[in-house]
Image (cartoon, rainbow, N blue to C red; front, side, top):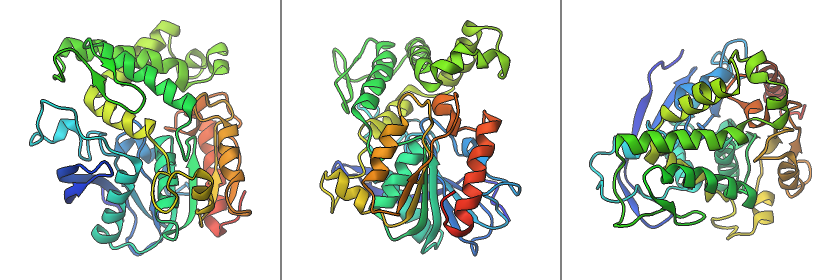
Length: 357
């Protein structure tokens, strides 16, 4: 049994960690399988739509609807859950409220427990920002799941990662003549905030795509011209225009800024009872956690994942890097078939009996 439609769950006037209330908030989601089966919570990633998560689901895969009730909740700002583009009742003379991982997971918890009647999950897992949400689940509701699988992501956005995102944000904002207000801050522009013109939108998003191009894949990916050999692009510029600019131009700049803030401010220890103590937050994880970084990921490197696992209670976590030159894209969204098979094999072993592969 599968719900083929994306649905909306109304959250009402939803309080955010910042103290601001998001009026008339809602979360988009899609489910696969029977509600009587063990639950799998599988959040979306930066810019990703719900459909962009479906590559890991299938009757031939570890995440099979024949065995699990799979729930894909969408991030605030992705254009399906509450976002600048789908909340016309919000004032348009100011930026969308800041949203955190904690806010997203609180909304997801409300959806899962009150909306779908799930009292416990077999596993929470996700790629990239989905991994950040996985860590947030593991620390915010540590008794709710048996297992966690964050892949190509982190429990706290590193300083280097924040700097990378600052470059992405600044390139986007320059498209409309604005500047970043700083790490985890919004835009600065003369005369105050204003909406984007079509020309500014195109200019900013193209710049975002070209900045991102140097980070998403590894040096070896480019050196070995995988974009030509396996993906079929004619040359590097063809890849830049059709893949990177094409991806960026399919998005909305304000939506991208909302999700970027969530990512840049990510910190699973920034909540009770940890109060900024990262080691305490990692010790607070109760579910067995299989951490899968990309060996060549430029902004979630394996050493950061190893640091996280080393601070978990002994026996709780294990770190196994993707042996891949696809960089961050080793973990998704299903482009590298070899890496997909590697990931699926690890999930099959882990989900079966909770044994680390």
